[in-house]
Image (cartoon, rainbow, N blue to C red; front, top):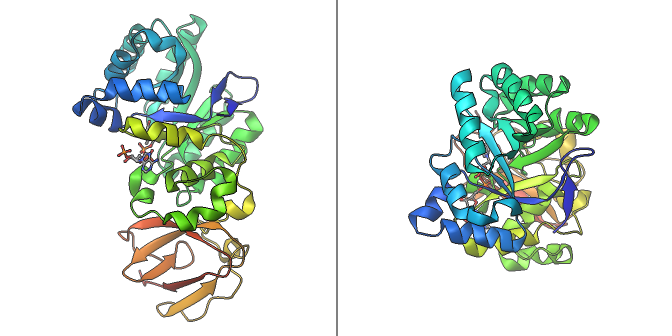
Length: 338
Ligand SMILES: NC(=O)c1ccc[n+]([C@@H]2O[C@H](COP(=O)([O-])OP(=O)(O)OC[C@H]3O[C@@H](n4cnc5c(N)ncnc54)[C@H](OP(=O)(O)O)[C@@H]3O)[C@@H](O)[C@H]2O)c1
């Protein structure tokens, strides 16, 4: 697996990490949390992200790591509005992880001014390696960008997948400019993007990139942006870790493979791969031909019709997924009135 520096001049880490939200507890429920962490380490997945927000995950991680603690980079979080509780969360994590947390992040920017000062002091004492901040919502990216610009954090953790591309506007360019580490969350859109994967035949064009499964295509999609350093892919299944780890090696996708209508909102963003012009006014069925491929295209699904996200208003409750399209494919779509 490829290693990338977590921001300019910082420690190198393997590009595929393990998320623990809900999945470590799920593994524990089937008696597999130790096996899961063992399989991650064996596969080379050696950065593990957790949080006090994830129920029992931090404690389960300590329990599963045992004597292997030094083989992994722990990315934990502080998540509380209380400065006092924040200090207690840090002390607990430092105790659990052998005297030091490699990366301590402020979860969802909650009470960040108080926690940041506390973490800076802890870093001075060697209890914390890097300091980061996370947010899952694009609505908070303005606040996150302002914190990044202070120069007081080393990393950010944000959602990034073919249907959640808001970070491309400000967060990724700013992180690149400032030399910050970027960990991406939700490579599978919390599982939504893997519910109806394309068949093996459709993945054939991605084979030269080492991709044999849809999950690997999604991990590779995120890591093919060089401004990203780690993809946090969460699973409760030990058997999936070798598959996910394999997506962390080059060759990386070029612009054609990454091209996606995603969550872009302007018509122009579709031009690289949608050759034909859209036919039919809003509310009427239309189709478009894919001009370059293979491409990952974000779609909203509604019965037999598809709507390319962002081109026309879509209903908020329409399930989304990502499809793999080839040059010459026709996407049939129907715009849905809001
Ligand atoms: N604000 C924050 O700081 C924040 C917010 C959200 C997430 N995060 C972090 O980011 C991590 C990842 O995000 P996420 O957990 O929301 O979602 P995710 O990683 O996008 O999706 C997890 C889902 O994908 C499935 N999956 C994993 N590998 C697969 C594969 N190869 N093929 C098909 N399905 C696969 C898993 O199912 P199985 O378990 O059945 O494999 C699980 O249901 C979190 O665990 C957490 O550490 C942080």
